[in-house]
Image 1 (cartoon, rainbow, N blue to C red):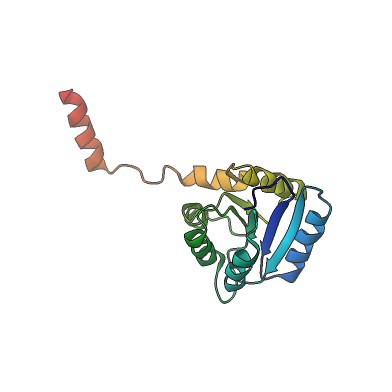
Image 2 (cartoon, rainbow, N blue to C red):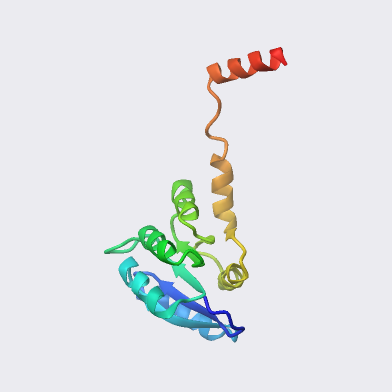
Length: 163
């Protein structure tokens, strides 16, 4: 959340050390990014966010002690401008909607290519929002699940006939 033109400051939050190490290695190769902190659960994420005030946070959803959604709600409650990217294996539309409503700026699946992750970090840092193609397909698939009931359709037809 720094205002200077320095590198994008990143916090990586995941309960799997291997994934955090992979993110660290990926970010280390980028001149416009730096990993400022890591956390293995939601409680640590809140502490590390307060301590380092990263520009972008990569947040897993399923973690011990405190999950990513609760951590995201807590962080954004204290720092409304926090830019958080959910990085998870869960594609379900309910999880996606909860994360987006909690303030996630992006929702990505862990199986994405490293280029997509880097592009998303840059986009979110620039103020954009994004979801991976798989997630957008899932959302679109269920966007019209709340169809009108037959009674609602009859009422709308009666209203249309009166107009």
